[in-house]
Amino acid sequence: MKQRVITAVIALILFIPIVLLGGLWMDWLTVAFAAVGISEIFLMKKQILVSIDFILALLATLTWTVPDAFFKGMPNNWTKYGVYFALIMLMLTWTVLSKNKTTFDDVGVYTIASLYIGTGFHYMSAIRNDPNGLALLCYVFVVVWSTDIGAYMFGRKIGKHKLWPVISPNKTWEGSIGAVICALICSVIYLAILGHFNIDFKASELTMIILAFFLSIVGQMGDLVESAYKRFYGVKDSGRILPGHGGILDRFDSMLFVLPVMAAVLGIVH
Image (tube, rainbow, N blue to C red; front, side, top):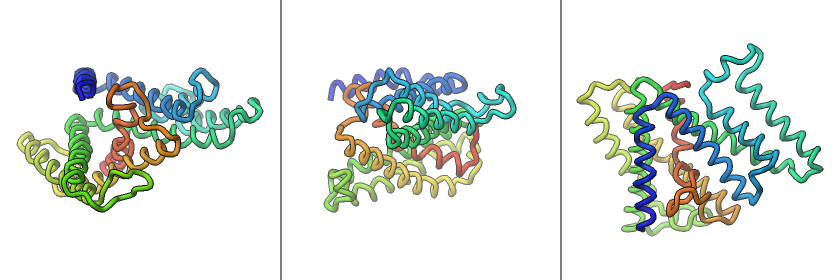
């Protein structure tokens, strides 16, 4: 417990100022998170990071992570999607050149992982750098963190019926429902506080409360998805970069699902 607390305090001391600053600081932070995230996929697969596979997968991930404006300085016929497709083609070509040491299945994992991780962290920066983005990103944190707390508290106190034991034995239906209730209550309180500052969320307060309901469910699915692939790879944590807390994917599993949905609903681009 002591190690978890120390890690959390140090992480927050580093994380909070960057979130407050936003801008390029946030862009670079999410790029760093994405790079660590894709490396955790490789480590779970027990594959080395000093390899052609990793370099291509990393570049593919960062293609989705960086702001769209990054590609405006490139030739007109070069787009984000074209660059990404070229990297996937190179990965597929490497299956031939490596004589199937890198397999088609491996490339499939790298492709999905780069989309999942890169897009999720892209929208963390996109939401923060939107007008009123600090309040919006904090709204996401409130929903996700209150969901986690509610699931733990309700599941521990009254949890009896297993939610999906094959994937995550400790999660219960009571915990899941309690998580949504907790997210709704906390989002209402948060929105009421912000109401005094006349902050425009591009949506009504009622819409944001309804959105909190759905984002809580989406966040829980993100958590279950990470549990599924960790169970598949036979690991307890996605990584060790945060002692006592696991890896970056462990800390942002729900966020990687919630952030793109939030951005899509509010029409946020970056």
